[in-house]
Length: 265
Image (tube, rainbow, N blue to C red; front, side, top):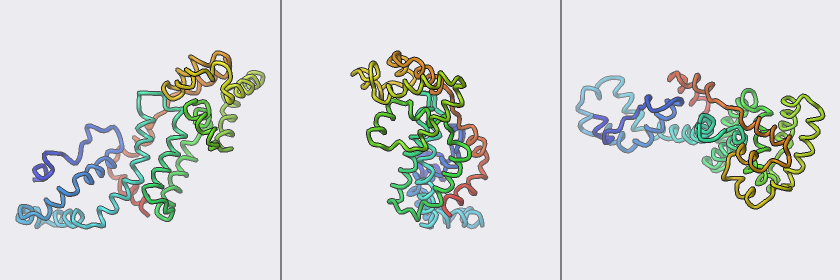
């Protein structure tokens, strides 16, 4: 009956997703909102045996209720941008290390925009996101990847959006990964060349390639006049990321109720 009203589309497609199945199912529900409401208000449904069962009545009450759909929209506004970040981290098209920091900022901006910048509607959500980001995800490595991503660095430097937190993370990463103090100083000297885009780093083709090539490819082609920084960057940007922590959490379907409750409260 449901498939007839949804034009043979299933609401649950667990075989086609690797994680966040519950969220994607919620999105699928929302995309079929009109068809589902038509189904549950139809004569066919009302005359069926399911409409007389307790569970059937409960499901129909939710689908017809505007409150259910309002809560669904709230959850999708919050979860959608975060899912995009996880897909980027879990993707195979380009090394994501140099993009995580920026992606999280863009995700939060998307959430703000979705709620018309009314912080009362997303303040509690941001507390949850910030707690997870600070405790588990935010690492000096991500800050270093952000600084050494030419496609982001030069744009953010011109807009003066690079914060002290990002620079502290970058220098902490250098100290952790490079134990030789002399080499640290050489990297510091070459960082100044990178910041001013001197030499090969500032030629026309290098400027065009900032956003066309991955950070690793860009540094391999144009970083020869800063060899120590070049080697450090390739090391940083080549490190892998994973969303496996989220996959373990979201693989259990029952977690979705707690997750959405936290986001909406």
